[in-house]
Length: 483
Image 1 (cartoon, helix red, strand yellow):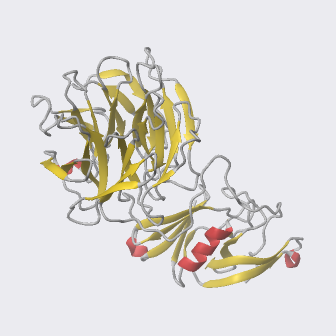
Image 2 (image 1 turned 120 degrees about the horizontal axis):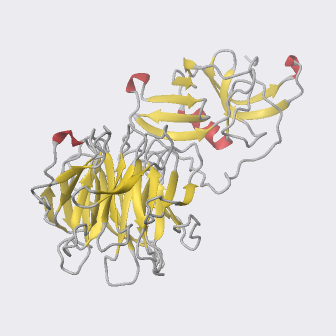
Image 3 (image 1 turned 60 degrees about the horizontal axis):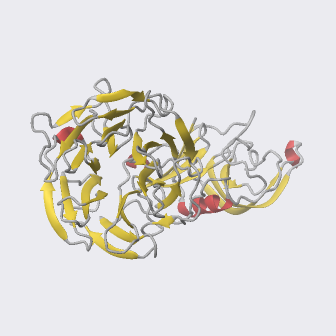
């Protein structure tokens, strides 16, 4: 049994944090929740209203926008059904109290996919707001422009294709990044190709060349937001990786020569989290400069963090946690002035995970990626948890393949004497065997180098993570290990 239960000797260090990054919570989790919006006062952090959207099912995520859409000097909340298998092409308009004012159908092609990206702003200098819509899961980067009654803004040219040579969907935002008198439409690619981002006018004419923000291997798509600093006549552009990617974002300055200098590049959460990022901006502190607001797009508890355009954290604004701690489906959010006080309101909505697991492996299964040094727990087709691990190093790699959980023991003594080695790790907690020959998931209290190979073949984990996996798995739970 113990032929593989031995580990490289390293310093005994208790895991507390990962440098600058936030450390994920360890709780039971749920990827679905009721399609409800929370309206939160950013000064008091109280939930002012909960708006329940009368969708046709629970597998529906939401996308909120905040704007005075009907020009009555009062901000409205626009809500799109944005993710999930039961979404409808509709937009609902609510007042600040959550009373539904209107509902509009969206006349878009059926093949658009079941996720909507939407943004609002004046993109044609006519003093009226336009709504810009695209579809991240489509096979086309087509962008639609609607007026405030959700009719095509220009019936003769209701849409344009941002990147004709790419067969991906698209996400959109709007903002004045060039310093002229109207907003540009900023389009980023969806999943399936190296990320491209472009700046367009309302007719689809492109400004400058494409921005290529991430590596060729980063094909998960991008998220977008603009952020304006005090005294600036134009906004900077924030670009983040979308779901199933690490939580990176970059901020670009859009210069006159369109060389796109990078102001900052950040990863917000530790690298086992592949939730991507949801982005927005707002002047929370009322200084004349917007803060960039970053949250997990999916697969992680909703936590909003606040940054300046240069990438420094705004420590005077504490993180905001949306919904219950157990919900990890991700979020979309918007900010606005919804009442007569000075506080900014946050409108936050749940998403539905777009990554789906292989139910043929069972309602629960475990995937360890040796190249990424991560272990992912899947439950009922959704990602439940993701952990940094340390697999086999040197000449003792962790074997790949599909196996099953076959044995558990709360405490094991790991002793290398019988193998001519001098380590001894007594009372090692939470040991879950996933392969015959003594290959276990288990705690490694003697090192803090998770994310790098360290073991003699087993899977080293932080103690809370090993404990969670020990309790969650059952005899026969499938384990897939790949490189």
